[in-house]
Length: 265
Length: 297
Image (cartoon, rainbow over all chains, first blue to last red; front, side):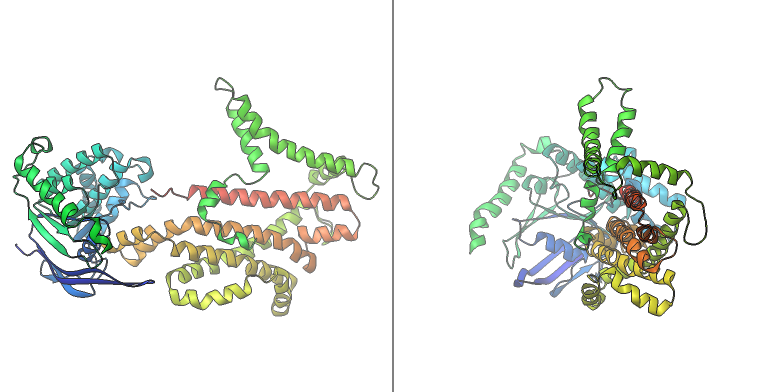
């Protein structure tokens, strides 16, 4: 399906205490089924806002969003979100955190044992089966983020929405999780929309990179298709001329054409 | 005590060792379990045990010095002697006005439990509603601001008028004084549930029941327990004063009765007993709160 997610002329205006803030204007974007799209831009450009619009956590003030031929009017488990700070519930174990999602989506149609198996499988998928009975505060930041991903994947969502999922992690852990994410996505054929501010991450993971102009009233500046075949290997790609070119294109957009200078204007 | 209502649960957690006795008790406990390990941490033991012991010893020393030549005010030794006599038979009963110290404490605790229990039954659900619905918040906040600063004993005549009996009036006074910290802390807790958790609930599309049991309740619990702790403290403060006025069997009435008998030794013992019971209540609730507090991750 070509137009799995459609964003049509979306506008977002926040009414804050300091007055109206025009965050996004005229956003038009389509995401195909099975595609991996990243949203990149300087902080404050509204990329997370756009992701939240697709999630349905906030509703646009203008325009419309459609997912799988239905209007996005509220959040739902078919559009799973991996939050920036993982948002695991600290009073539940890793498995219970995942189970909460599994139970909601499959509870009505499957047996308890089957649900438990699903939670286990999701944890195993992100290599966190060993920590099933641990509480979030007992595991490291990278592990928490993995459990967050497991919770999202366990719902078998139509779309996986990720809000800077690896932003808070150190470089080595981040690289490791990116590789795992690539494998998982390849295995599950997930459709992914991911917010990032990391150029390498964007080029390595994406089929297309959506580059956003600076806010206020940010919009999509340019969309870059990444022509790199999968599976991708970060070490080999480092010297690949296409990779280097794509990387330069993104950097050029971010720093030459939409550098911080424009922010003041 | 009203200003302490806004204690965050974090503050409560950090301040887990309440002032005085439990600290010393904890220190002794660690001291007892330590010797197995070598080398023995003398310095740590010193720092934990000596200051509280010095504090209590200092108080008793000043008391002993001041009362050395006094005929009216009992010395520490005399008080201790009397206390031993008294606690050797705490549960005697010679008519309604002469009962053992144990009975007095138990009757007071029973009143506190009833008043406080009713306050919790009303206050915690009300706090949840106020926290969840802005309309209710705006509706109740002027009422709470108006009624909360009222002295506990001002409520007693109302209780006497309505219930026409001393015991329900005392319970009513406890109820009305201990309800505010629970309402306010629960409401604040609900309002401060991290937006992330609620976003998770929205994405998962959890039922209202699941939101309450899996997200709201555990997130609010530490705040709620802070409210409960403050309420119990208030209730125990108020019961002594209320019983002085209403009479009957109870530690407060007992203090007043002993004052009428000019038995200062018993009053001093009562002060210690009230302090220790209050401390135990506080300590028990802090340990419960500790059990149900989760680190934010």
